[in-house]
Each structure stands twice: as C-alpha cells, then as structure tokens.
Image (cartoon, rainbow, N blue to C red; front, side):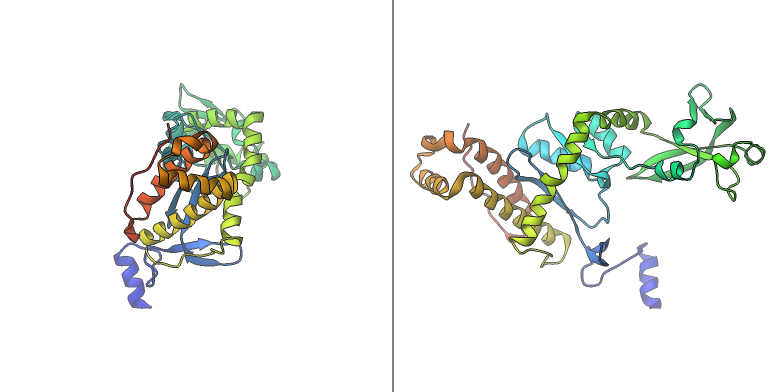
Length: 319
C-alpha cells in the first residue's frame, strides 16, 4: 500500500489502474467502476451516428466544442445546431461555440434552486455595477472583488465578490441571505458571463425547449440499439487507442444497420450490383440522400480504426 501511495504521489495521480492505465473511475447508477466515457453525435434526419469520441474523463465537460467541430467537418456543413444535455454545459465551451458560429442548444444547470428552496436571495438579486466592478446587495451594501478566483467547468474562471463580515453581521436581511454559520456573503462572476447571458436568453425560447425535449429520443436510441440488439455492453480491449478503435467499429456497425433499415435489402443489393458494374448513376436518385452522408461518416470512422491496420480505399461520391 505504501509503495502504491508513493507511486501516485510521485506521478501526481489520484488513481491508477494496473490492468489499464488509461481507464478512470466512472460513477454509474449501480456502482463505480474503471471505464471509458463514449460520446456520440446523432444526425436528426436519418439517425446516423455522425461523430464519436472516447475519453477517460468522468464527465462530459470540455467535449461540446470538439464534438461540434468534428460534426461540421464530417458533414461539410457550417450551419449546424448541436443539442446536448446539462452534462455538456460549460461556460467556456458555450463561448467557444458562439465564437465559431456554432448554434449550441445545451440545457443549463439550475444553480439557484437550492438557494430558492432555502428562502435565500438569488444571484440575480445582486446587481453588478460595472463602473466600480462591484455588486450591490438587496440591502444596498457593496460586495467588492476579492483576490480569490474559482476555476471550474473546464477551466472557466469565476471571480469572487464579497461583503465585509461586520456588514453582514449587522444586516437586517441576513437571515434571507446566508446561513447562520457563514461569516459573510459572496457571489461569483464568470469570465464568460456575456456568453452565458446570451445562451440563457436563447434557452428560454420555445424552439430551444422543443429541441431539448426531442434530444433524448434521438441520441439515446442508438445506445439502446447497440446494447440490446447488437449485444455490446463493454469494451473488450485495453488502452484508449484500441478502445477508440473498437468504439468506432461498434458505432459504424450501428450505422450500417441503420442504412439497411432506411433503404431496404432490395435497394442495397441494387447498390452493390451498381457499384460492381459501374452503373452507380442509374440508382443515384434513389439513394443519394442517405449515401452521401453515410460515406462521409464512413471515411471518418476508418481514420479512427487505425489499430486494426485497415487500409483506406477510394470512396465514390455521388455529386
């Protein structure tokens, strides 16, 4: 045990798996286990898995912008709307998407619910004064900027503003502001606040609310199909490079199954014969919408599967 603790301290680690050093502890509903985190992006039109990525992070912070960027490159479409749940929310990632012109519809965590349930003032009750870079509390007292900086949510900096302990102690509104054992009130201000405000306004629209409602039925369905119909529930290889390859194979298998469901076996046979005889133009109109996207995704998955030594062949694009 002492040797293991020395190893962790020397390598500045908090956890290490001898069997698979790349795997990390993941919090699951039934129990915690050493695992990988697989993300997917699903096309709303045909339900293809457009992009996928494997990481050893226990959460989805920091994945929104990279997955959205991959999707733009794969689909060759700059005008996309990416929809994600609260797990992907990060002020820094939202800001990156806004800067790159990506329409990100991501649920925001309700951080004020606990305060509201306890009868305390909300963050919105404290007014920011830009001229003096301070907050004004409901009792018209000033919360000045401290030297403390809280870093969270994928390296997003939150600057801390606080009142004096003597001011809070004598405040007639104290019971509606802070717990009895807390000496003074403090609020934080994100470095990405302008982007957060813009995003919050968008998320209050009916369009955004409807997209969030639809998200579960679109992106969760492939995982159910993969686990129940394809019988895949865990990775069979070790190391993030090989795991990424296996993940790509599984996702591509789902896409192939999905393609057959869309065009049918009969049309698929016609496609194979047309490819063999070089008469692809004859059935172009029947399959173009499905195949164009499918082939772009196929090329992307082949690049991920390098550990299997697959050789990338020329792909026919029907333009």
